[in-house]
Image 1: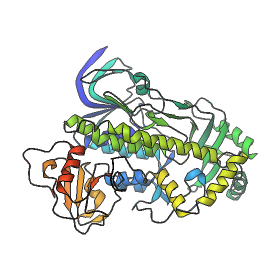
Image 2: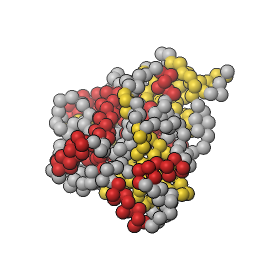
Image 3: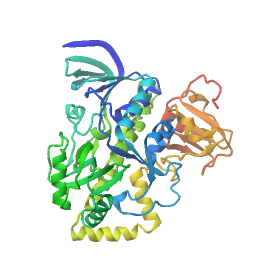
Image 4: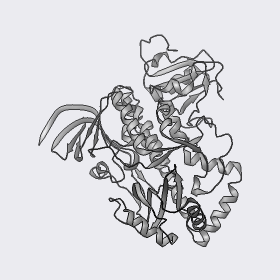
Length: 487
Protein backbone atom coordinates (compact mmCIF):
# COMPACT_ATOMS: atom_id res chain seq x y z
CA UNK A 1 0.00 0.00 0.00
CA UNK A 2 1.19 3.47 -0.78
CA UNK A 3 0.68 6.66 1.18
CA UNK A 4 -0.03 9.77 -0.84
CA UNK A 5 2.21 12.70 0.11
CA UNK A 6 -0.56 14.98 -1.09
CA UNK A 7 -2.99 16.11 1.58
CA UNK A 8 -6.10 18.23 1.31
CA UNK A 9 -8.26 20.05 3.79
CA UNK A 10 -11.49 18.18 3.03
CA UNK A 11 -12.22 14.89 1.29
CA UNK A 12 -15.84 14.26 0.34
CA UNK A 13 -16.89 10.66 -0.24
CA UNK A 14 -19.66 10.73 -2.82
CA UNK A 15 -20.07 13.04 -5.80
CA UNK A 16 -23.87 13.11 -5.97
CA UNK A 17 -25.93 16.27 -5.42
CA UNK A 18 -25.07 16.55 -1.71
CA UNK A 19 -21.36 15.96 -2.18
CA UNK A 20 -21.09 18.27 -5.18
CA UNK A 21 -23.00 21.04 -3.39
CA UNK A 22 -20.81 20.71 -0.31
CA UNK A 23 -17.66 20.84 -2.43
CA UNK A 24 -18.84 24.07 -4.05
CA UNK A 25 -19.76 25.63 -0.71
CA UNK A 26 -16.29 24.90 0.66
CA UNK A 27 -14.59 26.25 -2.44
CA UNK A 28 -16.44 29.56 -2.05
CA UNK A 29 -14.22 30.01 1.00
CA UNK A 30 -11.04 28.82 -0.71
CA UNK A 31 -10.92 25.45 1.11
CA UNK A 32 -9.04 22.76 -0.87
CA UNK A 33 -11.49 19.92 -1.61
CA UNK A 34 -11.24 16.49 -3.19
CA UNK A 35 -14.39 14.54 -4.08
CA UNK A 36 -14.05 10.76 -4.29
CA UNK A 37 -16.77 9.15 -6.41
CA UNK A 38 -16.80 5.36 -6.62
CA UNK A 39 -18.64 5.27 -9.96
CA UNK A 40 -16.43 5.59 -13.02
CA UNK A 41 -19.08 7.28 -15.17
CA UNK A 42 -21.90 9.72 -14.45
CA UNK A 43 -25.35 8.20 -13.99
CA UNK A 44 -27.12 7.85 -17.33
CA UNK A 45 -30.70 7.44 -16.07
CA UNK A 46 -32.89 10.47 -16.60
CA UNK A 47 -34.94 10.17 -13.42
CA UNK A 48 -36.91 13.34 -12.80
CA UNK A 49 -36.70 14.93 -9.36
CA UNK A 50 -38.46 17.97 -7.97
CA UNK A 51 -36.60 20.92 -6.48
CA UNK A 52 -38.79 22.43 -3.77
CA UNK A 53 -39.05 26.10 -2.82
CA UNK A 54 -36.23 26.19 -0.27
CA UNK A 55 -33.82 24.41 -2.60
CA UNK A 56 -34.73 26.84 -5.39
CA UNK A 57 -33.99 29.68 -2.98
CA UNK A 58 -30.59 28.20 -2.19
CA UNK A 59 -29.83 27.79 -5.90
CA UNK A 60 -30.75 31.45 -6.44
CA UNK A 61 -28.64 32.38 -3.42
CA UNK A 62 -25.58 30.86 -5.10
CA UNK A 63 -26.33 32.09 -8.62
CA UNK A 64 -27.19 28.60 -9.88
CA UNK A 65 -30.91 28.81 -10.53
CA UNK A 66 -30.61 30.40 -13.97
CA UNK A 67 -28.40 27.47 -15.00
CA UNK A 68 -30.99 24.93 -13.90
CA UNK A 69 -34.23 26.52 -15.13
CA UNK A 70 -33.69 25.80 -18.86
CA UNK A 71 -33.37 22.08 -18.06
CA UNK A 72 -36.53 21.76 -15.99
CA UNK A 73 -40.24 22.41 -16.00
CA UNK A 74 -42.03 24.61 -13.49
CA UNK A 75 -45.06 23.11 -11.82
CA UNK A 76 -47.49 24.44 -9.24
CA UNK A 77 -46.41 24.11 -5.60
CA UNK A 78 -49.41 21.99 -4.69
CA UNK A 79 -50.55 18.44 -3.96
CA UNK A 80 -47.33 17.41 -2.20
CA UNK A 81 -48.62 16.14 1.13
CA UNK A 82 -49.77 12.52 0.74
CA UNK A 83 -50.83 13.42 -2.83
CA UNK A 84 -53.91 15.22 -1.47
CA UNK A 85 -55.02 17.45 -4.32
CA UNK A 86 -55.24 20.92 -2.84
CA UNK A 87 -54.16 24.21 -4.43
CA UNK A 88 -51.10 26.03 -3.16
CA UNK A 89 -51.85 28.32 -0.22
CA UNK A 90 -51.76 32.02 -0.93
CA UNK A 91 -48.83 34.23 -0.03
CA UNK A 92 -46.06 31.69 0.56
CA UNK A 93 -43.56 34.54 0.91
CA UNK A 94 -41.07 33.33 -1.67
CA UNK A 95 -40.08 34.55 -5.11
CA UNK A 96 -39.66 30.88 -6.04
CA UNK A 97 -43.03 29.41 -5.05
CA UNK A 98 -43.10 26.56 -7.55
CA UNK A 99 -41.71 23.06 -8.07
CA UNK A 100 -38.98 22.57 -10.65
CA UNK A 101 -39.13 19.11 -12.23
CA UNK A 102 -35.67 18.35 -13.57
CA UNK A 103 -33.60 15.23 -14.41
CA UNK A 104 -31.37 14.34 -11.47
CA UNK A 105 -28.29 13.82 -13.70
CA UNK A 106 -28.66 17.43 -14.84
CA UNK A 107 -28.67 18.65 -11.23
CA UNK A 108 -25.57 16.59 -10.45
CA UNK A 109 -23.78 17.68 -13.62
CA UNK A 110 -24.48 21.37 -13.03
CA UNK A 111 -23.38 21.19 -9.40
CA UNK A 112 -20.22 19.30 -10.32
CA UNK A 113 -19.41 21.85 -13.02
CA UNK A 114 -19.96 24.62 -10.48
CA UNK A 115 -17.69 22.91 -7.94
CA UNK A 116 -14.88 22.20 -10.41
CA UNK A 117 -15.05 25.74 -11.81
CA UNK A 118 -14.44 26.91 -8.25
CA UNK A 119 -11.43 24.58 -7.98
CA UNK A 120 -12.72 21.33 -6.48
CA UNK A 121 -11.09 18.07 -7.66
CA UNK A 122 -13.37 15.15 -8.53
CA UNK A 123 -11.79 11.71 -8.81
CA UNK A 124 -13.93 8.93 -10.27
CA UNK A 125 -13.53 5.22 -9.68
CA UNK A 126 -12.33 5.84 -6.12
CA UNK A 127 -14.15 3.74 -3.52
CA UNK A 128 -13.34 4.41 0.13
CA UNK A 129 -12.67 1.15 2.00
CA UNK A 130 -11.13 2.35 5.26
CA UNK A 131 -10.55 5.37 7.43
CA UNK A 132 -8.65 6.25 10.57
CA UNK A 133 -8.84 9.58 12.34
CA UNK A 134 -6.57 11.15 14.92
CA UNK A 135 -6.20 14.56 16.55
CA UNK A 136 -4.78 16.14 13.40
CA UNK A 137 -6.83 14.64 10.59
CA UNK A 138 -8.21 11.59 8.81
CA UNK A 139 -6.42 8.95 6.76
CA UNK A 140 -8.63 7.56 3.99
CA UNK A 141 -7.88 4.25 2.32
CA UNK A 142 -9.13 3.52 -1.20
CA UNK A 143 -9.92 0.17 -2.79
CA UNK A 144 -6.72 0.46 -4.82
CA UNK A 145 -4.67 0.54 -1.63
CA UNK A 146 -3.90 4.23 -2.02
CA UNK A 147 -4.05 6.29 1.16
CA UNK A 148 -4.97 9.96 1.33
CA UNK A 149 -4.79 12.41 4.17
CA UNK A 150 -7.24 15.21 5.00
CA UNK A 151 -8.16 17.43 7.90
CA UNK A 152 -11.87 16.57 7.65
CA UNK A 153 -13.87 13.90 5.86
CA UNK A 154 -17.50 14.24 4.76
CA UNK A 155 -19.57 11.14 4.07
CA UNK A 156 -22.05 12.00 1.31
CA UNK A 157 -22.09 8.45 -0.02
CA UNK A 158 -25.75 7.54 0.12
CA UNK A 159 -28.09 5.38 2.14
CA UNK A 160 -25.66 2.45 2.22
CA UNK A 161 -22.88 4.78 3.34
CA UNK A 162 -19.49 3.14 3.71
CA UNK A 163 -18.32 6.10 5.79
CA UNK A 164 -21.15 5.72 8.28
CA UNK A 165 -20.44 2.00 8.56
CA UNK A 166 -16.71 2.52 9.10
CA UNK A 167 -17.48 5.03 11.84
CA UNK A 168 -19.81 2.60 13.57
CA UNK A 169 -22.54 5.24 13.78
CA UNK A 170 -25.93 3.74 14.56
CA UNK A 171 -28.63 4.01 11.91
CA UNK A 172 -31.79 3.14 13.82
CA UNK A 173 -35.23 3.11 12.29
CA UNK A 174 -37.65 0.90 10.43
CA UNK A 175 -36.50 -1.43 7.62
CA UNK A 176 -38.27 -1.58 4.28
CA UNK A 177 -41.54 -3.48 4.24
CA UNK A 178 -42.62 -2.55 0.73
CA UNK A 179 -41.09 -0.92 -2.30
CA UNK A 180 -41.99 1.37 -5.15
CA UNK A 181 -40.96 0.76 -8.75
CA UNK A 182 -40.41 3.83 -10.90
CA UNK A 183 -39.72 4.27 -14.58
CA UNK A 184 -40.23 6.39 -17.66
CA UNK A 185 -41.59 4.27 -20.50
CA UNK A 186 -43.50 4.41 -23.74
CA UNK A 187 -46.99 2.88 -23.82
CA UNK A 188 -48.71 0.85 -26.50
CA UNK A 189 -52.32 1.86 -25.85
CA UNK A 190 -54.14 5.16 -26.51
CA UNK A 191 -53.82 7.93 -23.98
CA UNK A 192 -57.56 8.06 -23.24
CA UNK A 193 -57.56 4.36 -22.27
CA UNK A 194 -54.62 4.92 -19.90
CA UNK A 195 -56.31 7.96 -18.32
CA UNK A 196 -59.57 6.06 -17.74
CA UNK A 197 -57.86 3.04 -16.18
CA UNK A 198 -55.58 5.16 -13.98
CA UNK A 199 -58.52 7.25 -12.74
CA UNK A 200 -60.26 4.10 -11.55
CA UNK A 201 -57.15 2.68 -9.90
CA UNK A 202 -56.40 5.88 -8.01
CA UNK A 203 -59.51 5.34 -5.92
CA UNK A 204 -57.71 2.56 -4.05
CA UNK A 205 -54.05 2.68 -5.21
CA UNK A 206 -53.21 6.30 -4.39
CA UNK A 207 -49.48 5.85 -4.89
CA UNK A 208 -49.96 4.49 -8.40
CA UNK A 209 -49.42 6.92 -11.27
CA UNK A 210 -48.95 6.62 -15.00
CA UNK A 211 -48.78 10.16 -16.28
CA UNK A 212 -47.43 11.67 -19.51
CA UNK A 213 -44.05 13.40 -19.44
CA UNK A 214 -43.65 14.97 -22.84
CA UNK A 215 -45.13 13.78 -26.12
CA UNK A 216 -43.96 10.15 -26.01
CA UNK A 217 -43.15 8.97 -22.49
CA UNK A 218 -45.08 8.19 -19.33
CA UNK A 219 -43.80 8.29 -15.77
CA UNK A 220 -44.78 5.14 -13.90
CA UNK A 221 -44.90 4.92 -10.10
CA UNK A 222 -45.94 1.45 -9.04
CA UNK A 223 -46.34 0.32 -5.40
CA UNK A 224 -45.35 -3.28 -4.78
CA UNK A 225 -45.80 -5.42 -1.67
CA UNK A 226 -42.60 -6.94 -0.30
CA UNK A 227 -38.94 -6.08 -0.81
CA UNK A 228 -36.53 -7.12 -3.57
CA UNK A 229 -32.81 -6.59 -4.02
CA UNK A 230 -32.69 -2.82 -4.26
CA UNK A 231 -29.07 -2.86 -5.37
CA UNK A 232 -30.42 -3.95 -8.78
CA UNK A 233 -32.86 -1.94 -10.89
CA UNK A 234 -36.11 -3.63 -11.87
CA UNK A 235 -36.55 -5.05 -15.35
CA UNK A 236 -39.23 -4.18 -17.86
CA UNK A 237 -40.71 -7.64 -17.28
CA UNK A 238 -40.94 -6.85 -13.54
CA UNK A 239 -42.97 -3.73 -14.30
CA UNK A 240 -45.23 -5.57 -16.74
CA UNK A 241 -45.89 -8.34 -14.21
CA UNK A 242 -46.80 -5.97 -11.38
CA UNK A 243 -48.90 -3.77 -13.67
CA UNK A 244 -50.98 -6.76 -14.73
CA UNK A 245 -51.44 -7.66 -11.06
CA UNK A 246 -52.61 -4.17 -10.08
CA UNK A 247 -54.28 -2.86 -13.24
CA UNK A 248 -55.16 -6.01 -15.16
CA UNK A 249 -53.08 -4.73 -18.08
CA UNK A 250 -49.48 -3.77 -18.74
CA UNK A 251 -50.54 -0.92 -21.07
CA UNK A 252 -48.11 -2.29 -23.66
CA UNK A 253 -45.20 -0.51 -21.98
CA UNK A 254 -41.87 -0.62 -23.81
CA UNK A 255 -38.63 1.31 -24.48
CA UNK A 256 -37.86 2.41 -20.88
CA UNK A 257 -35.76 5.53 -20.51
CA UNK A 258 -34.83 4.54 -16.95
CA UNK A 259 -35.99 2.14 -14.23
CA UNK A 260 -35.42 2.18 -10.48
CA UNK A 261 -36.83 0.98 -7.18
CA UNK A 262 -37.16 2.54 -3.73
CA UNK A 263 -37.87 0.96 -0.38
CA UNK A 264 -39.85 2.54 2.43
CA UNK A 265 -37.12 2.20 5.07
CA UNK A 266 -36.97 5.10 7.51
CA UNK A 267 -33.65 5.53 9.32
CA UNK A 268 -31.51 8.34 10.71
CA UNK A 269 -27.90 8.43 11.84
CA UNK A 270 -27.57 8.82 15.59
CA UNK A 271 -25.06 11.61 15.10
CA UNK A 272 -24.00 13.66 12.10
CA UNK A 273 -20.51 14.37 13.43
CA UNK A 274 -17.90 12.01 14.86
CA UNK A 275 -14.71 13.94 15.49
CA UNK A 276 -13.37 15.02 12.11
CA UNK A 277 -15.89 13.02 10.08
CA UNK A 278 -19.34 14.33 9.17
CA UNK A 279 -22.36 12.79 7.44
CA UNK A 280 -24.78 14.51 5.07
CA UNK A 281 -27.56 13.62 2.67
CA UNK A 282 -28.75 10.02 2.45
CA UNK A 283 -25.73 8.92 4.48
CA UNK A 284 -27.41 10.67 7.42
CA UNK A 285 -31.07 9.86 6.73
CA UNK A 286 -33.28 7.74 4.47
CA UNK A 287 -37.04 7.76 4.15
CA UNK A 288 -39.79 6.96 1.62
CA UNK A 289 -39.76 9.23 -1.45
CA UNK A 290 -43.28 10.51 -0.83
CA UNK A 291 -43.32 14.31 -1.07
CA UNK A 292 -40.01 14.36 -2.97
CA UNK A 293 -37.96 15.61 -0.02
CA UNK A 294 -34.83 13.44 -0.15
CA UNK A 295 -32.59 15.26 -2.62
CA UNK A 296 -33.75 18.61 -1.26
CA UNK A 297 -32.89 17.59 2.30
CA UNK A 298 -29.37 16.64 1.23
CA UNK A 299 -28.77 19.92 -0.62
CA UNK A 300 -29.91 21.84 2.44
CA UNK A 301 -27.58 19.75 4.67
CA UNK A 302 -24.69 20.74 2.42
CA UNK A 303 -25.44 24.47 2.56
CA UNK A 304 -25.80 24.36 6.34
CA UNK A 305 -22.53 22.47 6.76
CA UNK A 306 -20.33 24.09 4.11
CA UNK A 307 -19.68 27.52 5.62
CA UNK A 308 -19.32 26.11 9.14
CA UNK A 309 -16.70 23.56 8.08
CA UNK A 310 -14.91 26.25 6.06
CA UNK A 311 -14.87 28.52 9.12
CA UNK A 312 -13.39 25.70 11.20
CA UNK A 313 -10.64 25.13 8.67
CA UNK A 314 -9.94 28.82 8.15
CA UNK A 315 -9.53 29.28 11.88
CA UNK A 316 -12.24 31.83 12.63
CA UNK A 317 -15.06 29.52 13.71
CA UNK A 318 -16.39 30.06 17.24
CA UNK A 319 -15.79 27.01 19.43
CA UNK A 320 -19.13 25.25 18.96
CA UNK A 321 -20.01 26.41 15.43
CA UNK A 322 -19.32 23.07 13.73
CA UNK A 323 -21.39 21.25 16.33
CA UNK A 324 -24.42 23.32 15.32
CA UNK A 325 -24.53 21.34 12.09
CA UNK A 326 -25.84 18.34 14.02
CA UNK A 327 -27.99 20.31 16.46
CA UNK A 328 -29.72 22.16 13.61
CA UNK A 329 -30.00 19.53 10.90
CA UNK A 330 -30.71 16.39 12.96
CA UNK A 331 -34.12 17.71 14.13
CA UNK A 332 -34.93 18.74 10.54
CA UNK A 333 -34.13 15.23 9.32
CA UNK A 334 -36.21 13.70 12.11
CA UNK A 335 -39.16 15.87 11.10
CA UNK A 336 -38.89 14.70 7.48
CA UNK A 337 -38.87 11.09 8.67
CA UNK A 338 -42.00 11.77 10.70
CA UNK A 339 -43.90 13.47 7.91
CA UNK A 340 -43.03 10.78 5.36
CA UNK A 341 -44.19 8.09 7.80
CA UNK A 342 -47.45 9.99 8.25
CA UNK A 343 -47.92 10.35 4.50
CA UNK A 344 -47.34 6.66 3.89
CA UNK A 345 -50.02 5.84 6.47
CA UNK A 346 -52.41 8.23 4.75
CA UNK A 347 -51.83 6.41 1.46
CA UNK A 348 -52.86 3.09 2.98
CA UNK A 349 -56.20 1.56 1.94
CA UNK A 350 -57.23 0.47 5.46
CA UNK A 351 -60.55 1.86 6.75
CA UNK A 352 -58.81 3.84 9.50
CA UNK A 353 -56.31 5.42 7.09
CA UNK A 354 -59.12 6.32 4.66
CA UNK A 355 -61.05 7.99 7.48
CA UNK A 356 -58.03 10.03 8.60
CA UNK A 357 -57.32 10.99 4.98
CA UNK A 358 -60.89 12.25 4.52
CA UNK A 359 -60.59 14.31 7.69
CA UNK A 360 -57.22 15.79 6.71
CA UNK A 361 -58.56 16.58 3.24
CA UNK A 362 -61.29 18.66 4.91
CA UNK A 363 -58.83 20.34 7.26
CA UNK A 364 -56.59 21.33 4.35
CA UNK A 365 -59.38 23.58 3.13
CA UNK A 366 -58.32 25.78 6.05
CA UNK A 367 -55.54 27.96 4.66
CA UNK A 368 -53.41 27.77 7.81
CA UNK A 369 -53.41 23.97 7.72
CA UNK A 370 -52.60 23.83 4.02
CA UNK A 371 -49.84 26.41 4.53
CA UNK A 372 -48.31 24.55 7.48
CA UNK A 373 -48.05 21.31 5.51
CA UNK A 374 -46.71 23.09 2.42
CA UNK A 375 -44.05 24.90 4.46
CA UNK A 376 -43.08 21.59 6.05
CA UNK A 377 -42.64 19.73 2.75
CA UNK A 378 -40.84 22.59 1.01
CA UNK A 379 -38.64 23.41 4.06
CA UNK A 380 -39.52 27.12 4.11
CA UNK A 381 -41.08 26.72 7.55
CA UNK A 382 -37.82 25.71 9.27
CA UNK A 383 -36.87 27.77 12.29
CA UNK A 384 -33.53 26.90 13.86
CA UNK A 385 -33.31 27.30 17.62
CA UNK A 386 -31.01 30.28 18.16
CA UNK A 387 -32.34 30.94 21.65
CA UNK A 388 -34.93 33.44 22.90
CA UNK A 389 -35.98 36.12 20.48
CA UNK A 390 -38.57 37.24 17.94
CA UNK A 391 -40.24 34.64 15.73
CA UNK A 392 -38.12 35.72 12.75
CA UNK A 393 -34.92 34.71 14.57
CA UNK A 394 -33.65 31.44 13.08
CA UNK A 395 -35.94 31.58 10.06
CA UNK A 396 -34.76 31.94 6.49
CA UNK A 397 -34.87 35.38 4.91
CA UNK A 398 -36.89 35.44 1.66
CA UNK A 399 -35.41 37.07 -1.42
CA UNK A 400 -36.45 40.72 -1.72
CA UNK A 401 -35.63 43.71 -3.88
CA UNK A 402 -32.81 45.88 -2.53
CA UNK A 403 -31.15 48.97 -3.91
CA UNK A 404 -28.42 46.89 -5.57
CA UNK A 405 -30.85 44.47 -7.24
CA UNK A 406 -32.01 41.31 -5.45
CA UNK A 407 -30.97 40.30 -1.97
CA UNK A 408 -29.94 36.77 -2.94
CA UNK A 409 -27.55 38.16 -5.56
CA UNK A 410 -25.50 39.50 -2.64
CA UNK A 411 -25.09 35.99 -1.19
CA UNK A 412 -23.44 34.33 -4.19
CA UNK A 413 -20.06 34.20 -2.46
CA UNK A 414 -21.27 32.41 0.66
CA UNK A 415 -20.48 35.22 3.11
CA UNK A 416 -22.63 36.63 5.87
CA UNK A 417 -24.59 39.80 5.21
CA UNK A 418 -25.90 42.64 7.35
CA UNK A 419 -28.93 44.21 5.67
CA UNK A 420 -29.25 47.52 7.47
CA UNK A 421 -32.18 49.90 7.15
CA UNK A 422 -30.79 52.19 9.87
CA UNK A 423 -27.66 53.12 7.86
CA UNK A 424 -25.69 53.46 11.10
CA UNK A 425 -24.61 49.92 11.96
CA UNK A 426 -21.23 48.39 11.10
CA UNK A 427 -19.56 45.04 10.46
CA UNK A 428 -16.08 46.57 10.34
CA UNK A 429 -14.39 44.02 12.61
CA UNK A 430 -15.72 41.20 10.44
CA UNK A 431 -15.18 42.79 7.02
CA UNK A 432 -13.52 39.62 5.67
CA UNK A 433 -16.48 37.41 6.63
CA UNK A 434 -19.60 39.59 6.58
CA UNK A 435 -20.77 42.08 3.96
CA UNK A 436 -22.88 45.13 4.79
CA UNK A 437 -25.63 46.71 2.75
CA UNK A 438 -27.18 49.90 4.11
CA UNK A 439 -30.56 50.25 2.45
CA UNK A 440 -33.35 52.23 4.15
CA UNK A 441 -35.82 51.10 1.45
CA UNK A 442 -35.44 47.35 2.12
CA UNK A 443 -38.77 45.64 2.85
CA UNK A 444 -37.89 44.15 6.23
CA UNK A 445 -39.91 43.55 9.40
CA UNK A 446 -36.93 44.75 11.46
CA UNK A 447 -34.51 47.71 11.46
CA UNK A 448 -31.69 45.38 10.37
CA UNK A 449 -31.03 41.66 9.97
CA UNK A 450 -27.80 39.68 10.13
CA UNK A 451 -27.89 36.79 7.67
CA UNK A 452 -25.72 33.71 7.89
CA UNK A 453 -24.29 32.38 4.60
CA UNK A 454 -27.23 29.94 4.42
CA UNK A 455 -29.69 32.83 4.49
CA UNK A 456 -31.05 32.26 8.02
CA UNK A 457 -31.55 35.26 10.28
CA UNK A 458 -28.93 35.19 13.04
CA UNK A 459 -29.89 38.56 14.60
CA UNK A 460 -32.33 41.41 14.13
CA UNK A 461 -32.49 44.79 15.79
CA UNK A 462 -30.77 48.17 15.78
CA UNK A 463 -28.23 48.05 18.62
CA UNK A 464 -24.54 47.91 17.61
CA UNK A 465 -23.36 46.28 20.83
CA UNK A 466 -25.96 43.53 20.52
CA UNK A 467 -25.03 43.08 16.86
CA UNK A 468 -21.36 42.72 17.77
CA UNK A 469 -22.24 39.97 20.24
CA UNK A 470 -24.05 38.01 17.55
CA UNK A 471 -21.37 38.66 14.95
CA UNK A 472 -18.87 37.09 17.34
CA UNK A 473 -21.25 34.21 18.08
CA UNK A 474 -21.54 33.21 14.42
CA UNK A 475 -18.44 34.67 12.76
CA UNK A 476 -15.76 34.55 15.43
CA UNK A 477 -13.61 37.23 17.03
CA UNK A 478 -13.28 40.58 15.26
CA UNK A 479 -10.02 41.79 13.81
CA UNK A 480 -8.08 44.02 16.14
CA UNK A 481 -7.18 46.32 13.26
CA UNK A 482 -10.14 46.82 10.98
CA UNK A 483 -10.34 47.97 7.40
CA UNK A 484 -13.01 50.33 6.15
CA UNK A 485 -16.50 48.87 6.30
CA UNK A 486 -17.49 47.08 3.10
CA UNK A 487 -20.68 48.36 1.53
